[in-house]
Amino acid sequence: MISAAQFSTSASAGKHWVAIDGSVYDVSSWCHAHPGGQLVLLHSAARDASEAFHAYHPAWVTHRLPAFKIGQLATALPLPGVSASHPTPYPTTLSSTANKQVVDEINLGGRKSTQQHTGANVDRLKQVQRALEAQGLFTTSAGFYSKLALGCLACLALAIWCVVHQYISLGALLLGLFWQQVAFVGHDAGHNAVAHNSKYDGYIGLLVNACIGIGPSWWKATHNVHHLVVNSVDCDPDIQFMPLLAISPRFFTPLFSRYHNALLEFDGAARVLIPYQHFTFIPLLMVAKFGLYLQSMKQLMHGHCYINRTWEACTQLLFFAWNVALLWCVQGWTARLQLLLMSHAAFFLLHLQICLSHFSQPTFEGLPDGDQSWLITQVNGTMNWSCPAWLDWLHGGLQFQIEHHLFPSLPRHNLRQASLLVRPLCQDMGLPYHCPSFFGAIQETLATLKNAADAAAKFTACTTHQGFSNSKTWEVITSAG
Image (cartoon, rainbow, N blue to C red; front, side, top):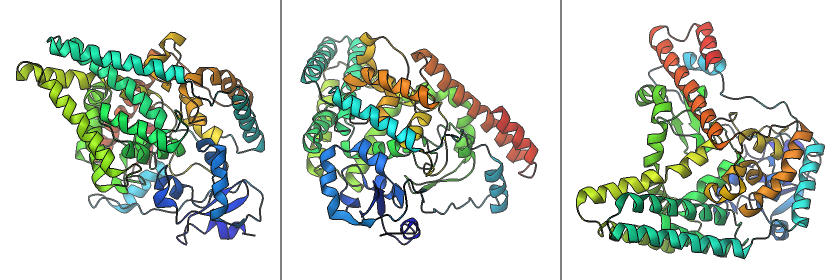
């Protein structure tokens, strides 16, 4: 038997022990090979990972657990989560005492849920999952993806025809739409929600890479972490965009990113850019795909590859090859530049949809509290938006982000039906189920950015002219922003 004290101190001793359904597993030797990424296991060290494990994995994976088992917990679940501490160095231009004061006084950019991790909400979520399984909703429809594949091919063919015949603007818009639709397939495959087999879904990921140039290894390294720690300011890479964007005042003081393993600072560039982020937000989304190329190549060259590195490199090169060839079908450098920029600008819709899912939701710092269940963590950090069923194809399942975060491997064509069970569950448990219209979600996101921008401007003025000693000043700032 392993005591609570032994388990809770295992992370500080450099061990990677996780608890699943009352048993303790040492995954230290498995971290580097984990298909979902190493950081997911590191964030789960010395924590009860039962709910996250069952949400991510099919039932057959449990048969592999005995190889890592080292004992049983001697105390009842759930155990409080314990996270390893990380140093947070401060910039030399400001005193540590002053920064500590601001950190203590600052609004952390979100509301801590008062809901507790109880057996009731865990059991209710399991009941919903069993109901989804009984209805066959975890089964992928071959017909759905066959129709989707034909639609994507038709979109690409029409885009190429338009470009070859010099209808540049229309061709660019269709190319951007093709990228968006294929990216949704890559998202599905990354969660093993297409073939429900990591090998075959990996092959789909390589095909997607050849189509859109966004590497599956980079996606796995970031996205699974995002799901586990959704809207954590220091752990979730999907809300860490300093110095370009900040959704929480917590980014205004030095913050150590546990994903990037680096200090995020509110430096000179941030002080200039963040106060205007509600204006620059959409333009940034229009060029964001170029950044994803760089991130994918960085992961390919220096990071861990979750698919064969050579194959991934070849599909990345194939993407650039056919896109350069397409550019050369256009007459003149001005028209080529138009095609390049307009097609990438059209891809902004996907980036917007991703941001809408989380930016306006509460944030927190660190790992989720040990007394906060998987259900609470996910519904607090995500939101849906309403749309008619005939527009589901345009949003790729992101309009049902709550259901997707609760059940990542659920095929997206079944998310609407799953929402009929998840919404009543949240209502019965007194949990938020936020679902505005699509344009309402855009307004909420822009309002969040505007509030943070105003707070950043006031914070800059405060720190420049008045110093950090006036805590009332920052109290006014945080209450306003």
